[in-house]
Image (cartoon, rainbow, N blue to C red; front, side):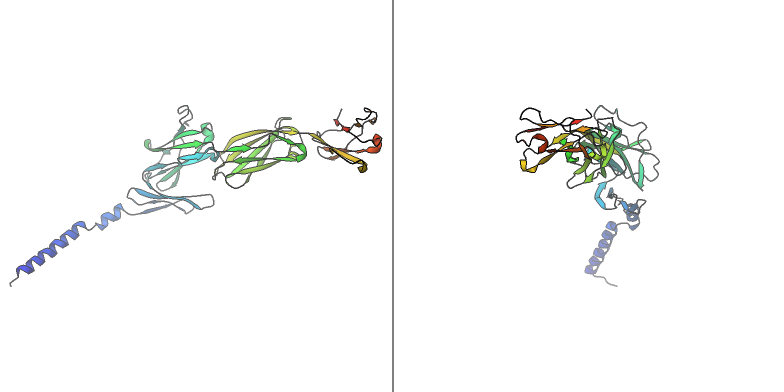
Amino acid sequence: MYISDHSKKLFYMICLSLAIILIFLPNSESNASTNTTEYNYDNSGRLIYTDTNNGMAIINRYDNAGNLIVKKVVKIPSVEAPAEVSLSNASYDVYAYGIKKDATSVSFPTWTEANGNDDLENPWVQGQKVSEGVWKATVPFSKHNNETGLYDNDVWVDGKFFGGAKTMVKETTSLRAPEKVEFKAGFYEVVLEGVSDQVQRVTFPTWTEANGQDDIKHVEGQKQANGTWKATIPFSEHNYETGIYTTHAYCYDQYGNSIGIWGASIQVVPGVEAPAEVSLSNASYDVYAYGVAKGATSVSFPTWTEANGNDDLENPWVQGQKVSEGVWKATVPFSKHNNETGLYDNDVWVDG
């Protein structure tokens, strides 16, 4: 049978095209073994780690409420730690991705660059397996002298170095509290600013200088906006004492780690209050004493006019009346002072 040259050329071209397709067609068996995606979940059933088996992985992280807060692609194997973190966090987490399935020991040695590795825990901190291929460890600042500065985070797997990352820890907070407050106010407020969003709670332990820490109270802070927490310190919780009050601020992470980062001293001052000016037609006025000691038994209110010296000073002195804890008062009738106008002097004496 005769085959034309044109037909031969067409046949050869078809064969060549088929050969090229076969050469470049991916081997389905090989592709399945090298590029099969693996999905790894934690104990709560949340997708934590997606290994694409091509040197990359997709990682997911969640907050305490189960909300997805981080989703990103990383190279594996790799060590992930925050590049920068606030000291108020109390801790941070270090993750290792791409750990071999049969690993038995994953260690997370961490130290600060201040003073060498004097704060390196021994033995090294053992990691926790989060899901297949993913391990993590928590670095509490309390284990590192609550230092700021650069932290070195290494990971070792079954005795071999796996990788590392660095974290800069910074002080970001400031505490606002009054230097002095009058007892009659009944309380003072403290405000901690610049707190990290990851902080779960803030407490403000407070005590008075009188009798040591017998009256210490751990006041729960209330979260405000923009990284601010505040607390109200009522004097009623501290035996209505005057003098120096000390308030500290402690931040807690989701694991219960805490860090004390600030302290303040507030002077609570007693006071005597009387009207600066009053009409004689009032017939009398009241004098108040604030910050009287809780155990006081005698609070006297000697009063006299500056006209003719203290010729009108009552003897014995007028005894006050207890209004509430720490607060006493007395009434000054003008009839007891010759109904005089001018300046009246009001003193208060407590237990002599």
